[in-house]
Length: 143
Image (tube, rainbow, N blue to C red):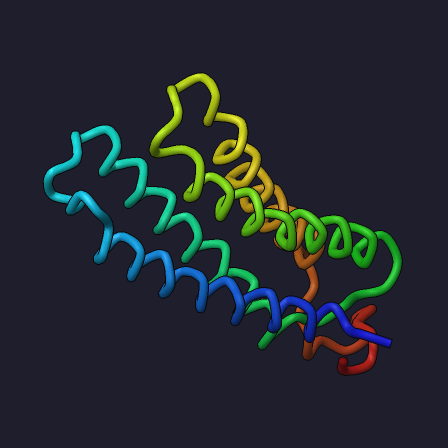
């Protein structure tokens, strides 16, 4: 079986690699990025950085995630599902948003950012009041 921690690690590494690829796409873009209009250039750069953010969050959870029991585990699982989906929406936004009109591209980046925020908040709430080294904590054995 797989562990949430390993999945976060794989998703994080793949997303950071895709971030590096999108940087090269922007570097070798034709026409050159500096010749594009401000709005289109901002779209590329912002989506590029959003991909990095989602990749780093998944990468860090892949390194440090500690699963809890009970309601906390349910919140963590739902948060993880949101965090797994975030890079997908943000990569789609990078590929499609810069050339699209404003109304047609908002849903991809908005969903990706809300998924990133929601997943982080659910993991944060699940850890409130718990310390991994406190006696009697409801932490599951190491992953």
